[in-house]
Length: 98
Image 1: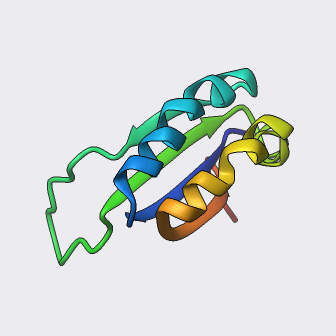
Image 2: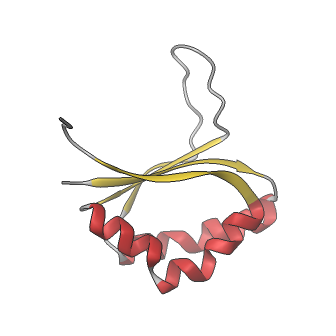
């Protein structure tokens, strides 16, 4: 079952965040992931949208998503994201849930 890493991000240091953003695609791809959403502007249909930047990355399964997050390659750059932004990051399994 597919799994998704979902991040809500508020960028506080655009220059440092760009350094992080430039390095993530190769790491994501190396672990079987692909970007589904990467910071596009939403068309809000209802309510107020408070998220500055939304990122959704699809992986074949939860184990692959976890391998990506815990990988030496990602851990080498994750501090750039932490220095340059505030937000939340979570893994969700796709498909019907009971």
